[in-house]
Length: 325
Length: 165
Image 1: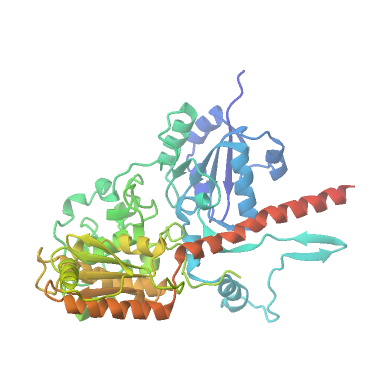
Image 2: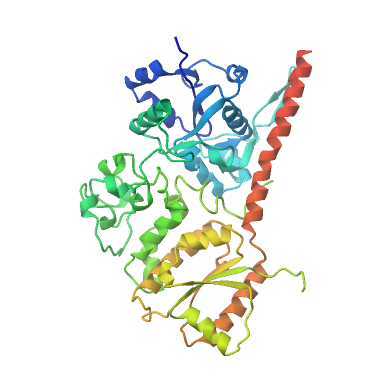
């Protein structure tokens, strides 16, 4: 019997939603398991780091790695899995473009640690104890990974062969990607394994997209009763669809929520946020500064709106005046 | 030549007004600082915010955008489009820690060679006071923290080996 290709699935700074998608393959996962040997998947299976380390280099056909890289341990695992895998696939928004964790590139590490361990309303920590990287316990030294100052997408740490986008990726594109990997029918290295067209293309509201939109105000989804059939832009609600890659089957817009951009930009977009800002602002109705600012007041957090999943991979990457020590 | 640092400014000028103004400043023999690398575009409305961010990310200390006065755009609407983007881009740059004086929008008509000169002097002066932005250097500095991994792993493996003996 020929041996089945070995596959690894690993997570770094992520919420677990990507792992959930693999589980959401439901019965189809049996088809996957039939064709491959999953040799590493800490969420679901009891293999340890040293099991993978013991394998020869390049012995895994592919590793799907989800989550951003923001600690020394995640960095180490990314390097190790890169060595052991023929294909390293950035799976999900965080590994692809930094994802939600990437938003913390707006704050310093000290700011985050202070907030999380001292100032969060739900914490009681009078002694202001913070995790230490090392301490002695019964004569042994115990270590914790170090939190990095900068949150990174996977390809900012190691070389990545393919990207599967989404927060989380859908079971369908996951299955299509796995199929392509197993059959060796892959596009050029570095490709994103999803269609290279804007979301509007597969949005059921496409026909109601106005050719000439003029924004007199912006409303956020909770401030308005949303029409379930009309293009969000025509309703004055920010929808990232025009600058976002499709392939998600327009799940959000079908569920009456605007696109927030998790699939990242299309291949022609260099900076998803700037591109969206450009397209949106050009179509504001007023022509004078005061009127324009009034309309723009409807976008209280431009960075969080336009770079919700892509700050780490944006042109600026991080708030530029933050410290690194 | 002195080694004193001077700002590097990328200027996007519209073909019909500001670029022509810089030509006029030239033929009128007006002297203005040579810090700006001028890129001619057909209209200020063609300037995608991606261009501005990319200029900064690749080492510009400031970006100057020049377009036609309101109501004078050759394409009727282009300068308004730029103005609207600029208003939000300014807010976003501030949130990202970049001083707003580094990115400037000016309406300079084809007849205003003198204004071009004044704006150039003022922009260079303001950016000089702010100092270098040097994002490429910052990106490198940020990534230095990843160099520590190798040393840490080696040290730990060393300890584990020692422990086993």
